[in-house]
Length: 96
Image (cartoon, rainbow, N blue to C red; front, side, top):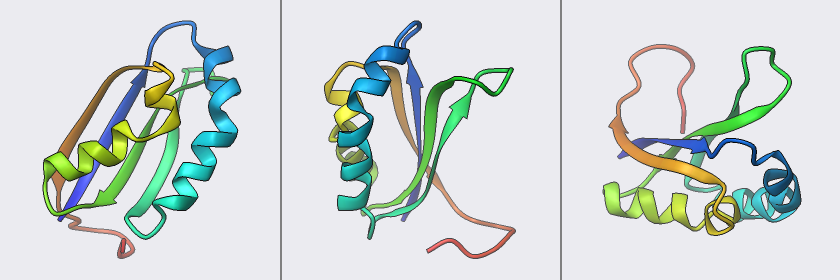
């Protein structure tokens, strides 16, 4: 089953995000078989990363959230919130 993971950064955490970015990218490489799509949310001016959206394949919501909370960004306390919502693709190029 596919899940949309929505990660929202705490305010004023750009330095924390930058410090943990190499570990975060390595983690995304590690979970690549389950990660179908990922990218940052941006500030209105497009200059700052303020969260992220992932689409992951997992057997259930708990497993999807384990992927999300295993992210070094989450472990470092970057996120104000993380959610996992079941999702089904209806249009566009096939994911996964």
